[in-house]
Length: 142
Image (cartoon, rainbow, N blue to C red; front, top):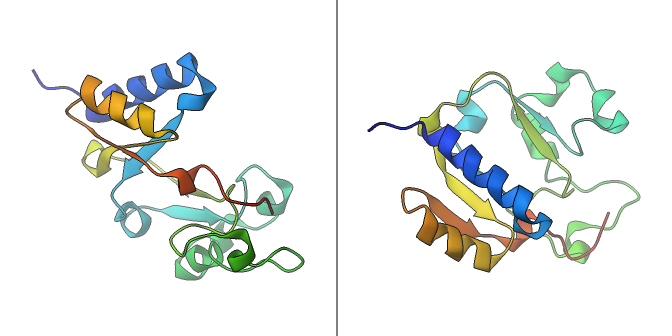
């Protein structure tokens, strides 16, 4: 029987979220989404006044993507925050993808806790689950 990977994985994540705030996760997508889809890159929460004041067109393209990793004036530098090179400076940074993300882009999910990732691997062997602390925490706040 064929199944919709995106729908099934979304159900898994919603179940995990409902069960406990400490077991939340996020989708793990192919990086190609960033250049194959129409995306906007937000240096902070996409709904924040700081971000919504920037025209959407200015939040698209390579320059906008690179801003996710820049230092912020008046804020501690990345080295002081202990942020790795592969993580955005602001933990609230977001990527907006306009339109549908086809299931072929979905690799699996990233869990907030190692135990959650291990448990989900057993429960849902058709998906990949990993633990990646840096996606959910930074050592210090901006």
